Image 1 (cartoon, helix red, strand yellow):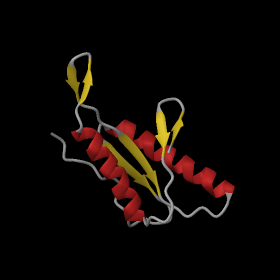
Image 2 (cartoon, helix red, strand yellow):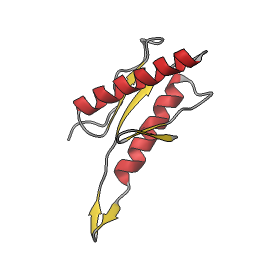
Image 3 (cartoon, one colour):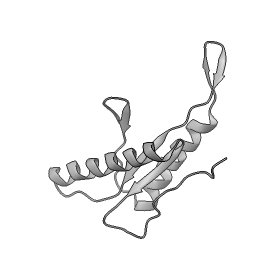
Image 4 (spheres, one colour):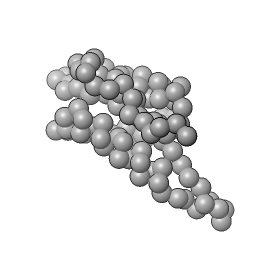
Length: 104
């Protein structure tokens, strides 16, 4: 995991299948959404938006492409609302496009 400017973080995982990677992003989203934070004596709830890209890069160029795909998924998540995970995976069109809680 590392900071990705300006306000983003990147997590690269190894040996996860597509659904394992998506499940990890969902789990992080759920933990953040259900964890209250204290700020200036007030309880604050936070949400995240996550972009997930699934692939098995075989070269540095493929890794760069994977990161760009994840960034596009994040842009899609930011444009689509709060507290969501968006997935882009050209290698597997059978993956769901979104994995998000129902709108309230």
